[in-house]
Length: 322
Image (cartoon, helix red, strand yellow):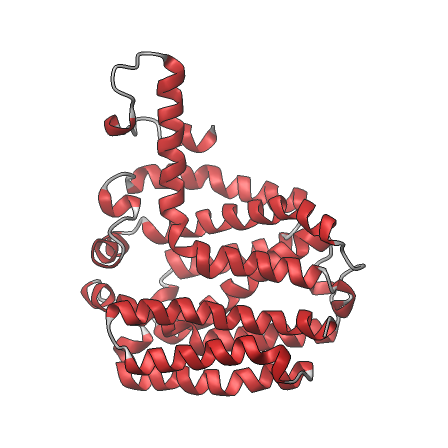
């Protein structure tokens, strides 16, 4: 196990069964420890990146002709492709998270905002994370080359290196733009894996829709920063809420939701039935963002943001089958 070998020397005495001297028991204990470590590294992004990416890939591969990305895939074909979509997403999010979480300022922030993360607790050291990265980069390359999603992988890798290693996240506006590119890559990667067609060869409708989604992410993704303001301030980060003020940043999200929801509906020429999901979720998020300005309330706002985005990406699928 490549990742496990990179973590050689890591152990958790508490996970080893008491009185068990059998090598299989120790092996299972070690494997379970490392699997849980991988989960902790990525857990914060399962809801907002991996699940929406799988949903985007599954629903849009079912209407692939709309985008000139191959024939309609049956439910069986989509289910058969799901493990590969999941593999692509998990490899790339693990790579991103390792780059993001190994820096001293991130570790300091995580001790305040996300204390369960492995490098914040000492479960994983930055040196071990760096060794794993040497394995993950060629692994992600081979995965994308063999199962698809190569273009999103390349773009995502370039941008997350800029974001995490070259100071790209130090500017709040640039951070939102990079987040927009990242979200689009995490969405189109699974779609390319399922359809075996590149998004670069899609039609104009697909490209415009992707541009609209990128604009949505660029103008609303700082909704995730409200919950982390305490840690970001301690780490000296310049996120949009800290630079432009909390109230004005919240109003920006509200206005963006109010603008982009009808824009998406107009682009796909749908009525309220197909847009109900996004309208309800967007309304709830706006109300929660304005009325419950606590750390817990802001964490909930981000979760509702994800539901709102999922409602938007479902619009073309619902339109096709309305």
